[in-house]
Length: 118
Image (tube, rainbow, N blue to C red; front, top):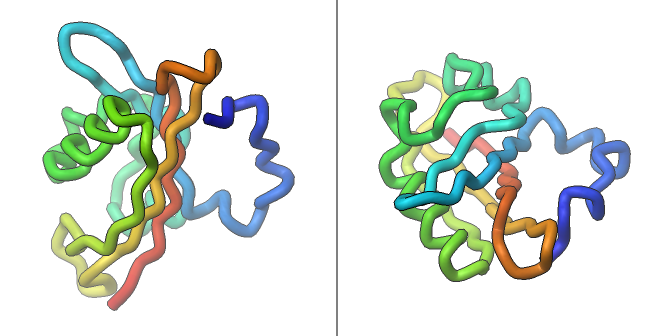
């Protein structure tokens, strides 16, 4: 797995507004704390998730389940999903979510790219 130091945001400036990253907090249950929430995501979801625990955001139940599975299996995923909040602009979104590891064994960061669709 790549680690955070393997990724240089300067290499993907055109994608940064659609990216979010979360730190994995290990414990009795896996928790995710948002470390980065791109500006396109802030607009689409009408919230800035930065520094929030993902499971405390009302619409993230299915997202948390998918990401918890990603942490356990250490396998990324791509899916097309129904937009989780009421929106006049979007009905669906696609997401590519990938694990990152500082020790090449334990997932400690997740990076996700979202694309919104009518």
